[in-house]
Amino acid sequence: MFDKILVTMGLSSHTLSTIPYVRHLAIKFRSELHLLGISSEPQKVWDQSLIGYVESIANSLKEDNIQTKTNFIYGNPAVEVVKYSDRNGIGLVATTAGSCNEITTTILSNIAKRMGISVNIPVLMVPIGRSKEVDLLEKVAFLKILVPLDCSEVGESVLPYVASIAKTLRSSVTLLHVNTPPCRGVPIIHNEVVKISHSAGRDYVKKACQRLQNLGIETNYEVIDGTPVKTILKYANQHKVDLIAMGTRGSSGIDSWIFGNVTNKVSERTTVPVFSVSYPASGAKGVPVQIGLEQPLTVK
Image 1: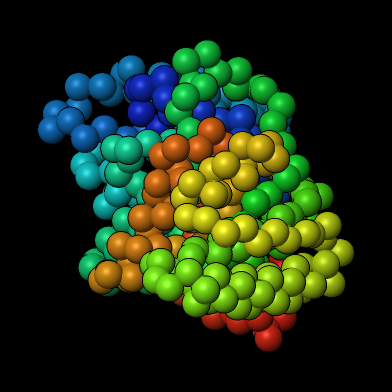
Image 2: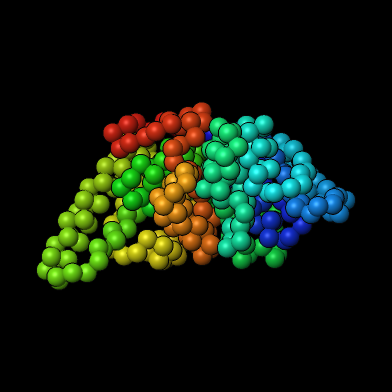
């Protein structure tokens, strides 16, 4: 599924945060890593420093027999990542998360659409908080994956990717449905609505859980009343998950703002990596263009 992984690189030490994670994925999926040095400077003032920096990282990865390629681009990072991914058949983009991040699943999807490019790439966003002294050979593993689902095809779009990751890395998966209570009205009516909504959410994630279990993946589910971002972050912290995988809307409009906003806020505030895929799914090898709970998961 991840034959080629693009890693965005800059001179900031923050960019090193992604390396242990993509190293882990590259070894397990036998991926080719594309280390892409990016500078938005109008003049190529960072040429030698950036080239030396990126190539030194590439050499350290080659010691693990990971095939690497290094390239360098100048311009708008998100636009250039879309163009590079389209030309080179990239299956995953790895970058650092943060409130000023210019590369997210939604941004790349919208840029590709405006440019008329048929590319829709999953993004792995890694927190920057631990990046000052990163050990490039640090052992990391996605052993516990948390998947928030909101009873929509948007949320479901991440499931085929999760299935492939979990099968390859032998991860366990927890499906989390956050039952967001409606605006309060008459207490008795409000409580009944919450109960009905909670029950419907449980039926939904239980069915999704069974689909993953049928693939031999260790899977459980939780339904919690609360607000999405706060509940997801709290659950991930309490249960020490290694990866949060989420679907998000890739088109423009209010639904993009709602779904994209939850994913972006989670990636900005969490201490673990976030894997995000835009709906509709990309149609990459092994991944159906559209999925629903009645359709089988396809795993490469």
